[in-house]
Length: 94
Image (cartoon, rainbow, N blue to C red):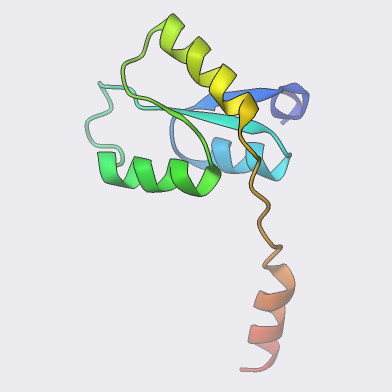
C-alpha cells in the first residue's frame, strides 16, 4: 500500500490494485497482458477502464506505457461514494 500511496500513476492489470489506487486518489493505467488469456475479456477491460477513467495499454511496450502514463495524468481521477453507510443502513432495515 505504501507503493500505491507514494505513486503519481499506478500501472496495473485490471483487478484490485487499480481500485485501491483510485481510492488513494491516484491516476491509473490498465495493462492487458497478452499471455493472461483466461483473465477479463476485452469488453470487460474496456468497461473497467472506463469506470476508472484510465487509458488501456493493449500492446505492452515501454513507449506505449509511457504514453499511457502521460495520458492518465491529464485525466480526472474518479470519485466514488463510500458505500459503507448505505450497506449498513440496508442491513439494519432488513
